[in-house]
Amino acid sequence: MPSATGDSHRFLAEAAQKGAVAALVHSDEGFELALSLGLAATQLDPAQFEDSMWRLALAAFGDPGLRMKLIAITGTNGKTTTAWIVRDLLNALGVPCGYLGTLGFQTPSFERELANTTPFPIELYAMLHEAADSGCEAMTIEVSSHALAQKRAHGLTFEAVAFTNLTQDHLDFHGNMADYEAAKKLLFTKFESKHRLINTGDETGKKWYREMPGAKPFQITPENSNPAQTNKGRGVALPPATASETPSSLIATPIKVELTKLRVAIEGTEFEANLGGDYNVENCVAAYAIVRAIETPEARACFNPEQVCQAMTQVRPVPGRFEPVPNYQNIGIIVDYAHTPDALTKLLQTARPLVSGRIITVFGCGGDRDKTKRPLMAAAASAGSDYVIATSDNPRTEDPAAILDEVAAGLTGPHEIIADRPQAIARAIELAEQGDAIVIAGKGHENYQIIGHEKFPMDDRELAKKAAKAKP
Image (cartoon, rainbow, N blue to C red; front, side, top):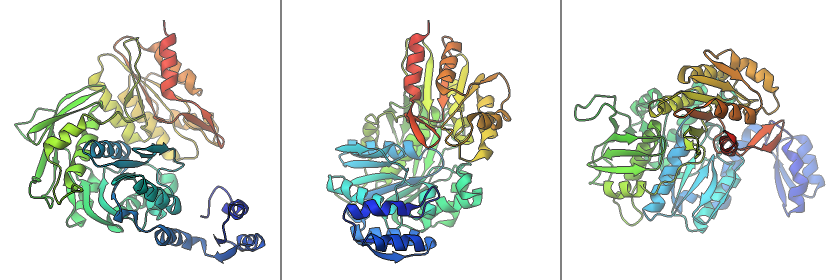
């Protein structure tokens, strides 16, 4: 594939050494190099590569969607957690299911890290067939806006596709929100799927639903819209699925939401999950709606509410998504991947009612990424916190001090700026008292810091544990 970071023809020699006999190239220089290495070569215009690669992958591997149920989830926030929950639910329900996305490539028998949330076509198709060969009957896949714009997943047939929400992110790639939205929408207009589930509680989702006959809406019911619900009532609305026992609406009412667990009433029964925070109620209900919509492998029927609720007890906490860090200081420490203004706002709104003391937030903004969201992230942190510490988050090739200067433009209220991330986390824990909560946002599950083009070991969870242990 043509690359913005280097000439991808540099891999031709290695490919030839490993037995390649032909190459698709995108320049005169690449064509000549391929011939000099003894490779048959076809030169394509760079614009043709995206269509050529997925068609080549489909021809070489076949559609893995014909071998197992593929479930694709897209959206700015929530897609990782929702995909993770759907995977755990299906495994608990007896459907061997894998996961492919931000947290890697995982099946019940193995797991690997990924360079991209959604791999490029050849690698993606190969992985999905590897999953099917290993015994997977289903796969949940995060499909990013980059992947949709670059046609990485084209040619796949899905059992279900789902949309969580749309807020500002990735404008460094898409340029504007209209193009970002158009990329996300491709999952619902360019792919074959039995079920299209759309969050109509999101304004973009509401608009899409009106444009897509046959789509299944789910949404959070406005508070107090149903007198029978508590003031924290939530709901999901779905039209009837193909199975006769699936009702036309799903109403979810949170019974208790804590930092580390939640309990929800739904469809005349209840489920408990070892996930904390109000927005994980939304993720759990979205996953519930997806699993209730799809059919069991054995027959044209849906899993019943009791089955799905029982399976919810088997859902594991998602690494780096509202993940608590145990400590003996009676301080709540939460590590989360929130790296957009909307995600950070929702994260802090979720934490606030669960904390008796102050919220101290540690966050940063990545280098070589959308600069316009930096002051917006700072404003979100200031609005939702009692104290803010701005720090580095994968500065990449940018100067960390320059990034923090742009972040500082949005900071209000009590705050500090500490470029060194370990020092920033240690400072937050030093400031915290019993009853306070520290929210460490931006990197979540990542166990590295990217400086320049190199990854250096760094894990927010381990840094927090170490600092808490050292606190008098």
